[in-house]
Image (cartoon, rainbow, N blue to C red; front, top):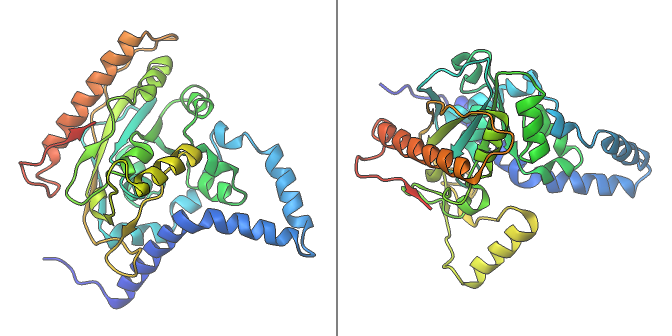
Length: 326
C-alpha cells in the first residue's frame, strides 16, 4: 500500500524540485548578473579577485574537477528523488579495477534522472557499485560561468570534452564511470510523454574515446524521463524550429518550450527508473580504425535496444512500446 506523504514532506519535495529547475535554468545567468553588478559597486575588488583566481583555475574542470561528498549528499536531492519518485537499478556488476563510459538515454528536457542518479547519492550509486565513482559530463561552456562552475564541480560534473574525458579515463586511476548523455540537444527536442526516441546512429565519438582508452561501454536508460514535461514541438522548417536550430548552433544547446504539471515549471509526478545495463568489453586501441568504431557502435546500439526491451514492462511501459533509434 502506498504510504501517504505529510503536507510538510510534499512541501519540501516541491521546493527542492523547484530549486533544481531554477538552478538549471536561471543560476548561470544569475551568477553572471551578480558579478557584473558587483563590478559597478564599491565591492568591485571581489569579482576582480575571483576572475583572476578563475583564470589560474581555468583547467581544473578538465582535470577531474572538485567533487564534494557534502554537496552530493545534500538532503535536497533525496526530496527531488521522492517527488517523482526515482530509483536506480543495477543489472550487472561494474569492476572497480576498470574504467567505463556510461551512455545515458534519453536526454529529456533536463536530464533529471541522469543528474539524480550520477551527480548525487540520492539513488545510492556508491552503494550499488562500491569502489566506482560516477562523473556526469556536461557542456564545457557551463564551466566558464563564474560561481556556477563551482556548483557544477561540487556535484562531480566535468566537461564533456576530449581533454576532460582523457584525464578521467587515463590519469584518475581506475573505477571511473564517465556518464555521457549521448543524444544531447538534438534529443531534448524529441522529448515527449510516451515517446522513446534516442539520437544515436551518427553519435560515434564516445565509442572512439572508449577504444582509445580501453574503457568498457555501458548502456543506461531512464524510463519516464520524457514524461516529466509536455513540450511544444515545432514542425521542421518552421520559424520556431529554425530559431531552435540557430540557438543550438551558437550555444551548443537548444531551448525547449515546455510546460509542467503546475506552477508552469513543476514537472509531472511520474516514476523515473534509471537502469544500468551490462558492460560491453572494449579493447584498447591507440588509433582505432573506423571499422572498429562502427563495430562497437553497432554492439552498443544492440545492447541498448536489448536493455530497453528487457525492462520496459517492469518500468511501466506496455509490451508494444518500441525504442526508436535515429
